[in-house]
Image (cartoon, rainbow, N blue to C red; front, top):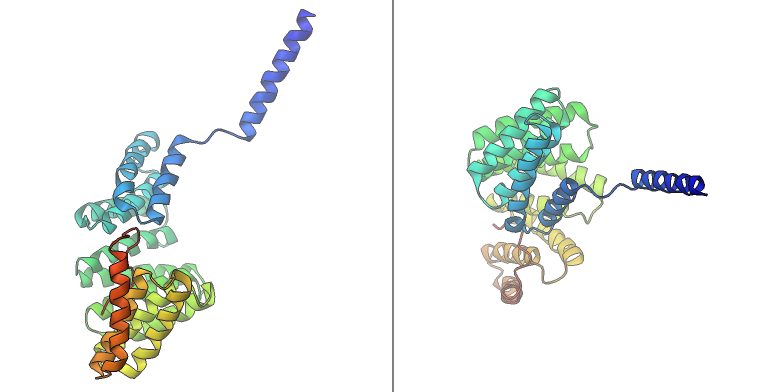
Length: 285
């Protein structure tokens, strides 16, 4: 009887071990990384930053300074610094991530293009347009080689090149990049994806700066309709788009059309004073 009991005990232990192997407990490191990603997605950057710093410190010790997962951690940390406008820290994180990926992967790997794109967006934010354009063109070349011509990552690179040209005042050059990017996004994601109104606004801004109001107006109206449908009538992006469209009407001398848009935008702004859980991402003219 004692022997049978021992066998049963061993059997229970083995079954428990098998169940544990099939359903392992959550990895604390993964849970922490996922928490940072969740906060990043909710745009709670300041809250996510110390957790991301902890992830980087832990993984550098556990994985080593040349591991690709550590490069991914650095990239996420750079994104948070970037959003918080800590540009020097963001640049250092992006560059470390890029160096690891270039060492561990081949120079034309899509992950290298991702690091290049993040770094060039930082350069745009800092006004370093020559540096940004150089990296953007390298990232675009990698993605054109790696993906089909209608891949969303190519659309992102095209949009980014358009942004650099627009910042440099080269709106005539920027417009074609925006248009091609828009076509790719609409095909890949559908007409209501959040990327669509962003590019519509950026393209409209190019026309606006060149006083081509007739071309800008339908783009802004389309952007506004998408945002009202997907974000709701009181979202910060809706307020910014309303102001952009009102500014266009004002410049055309269409004051009666501009006034109700300004009033509606002001009402949204007043309402938002009591709720800052969301911030505008739409570009303002």
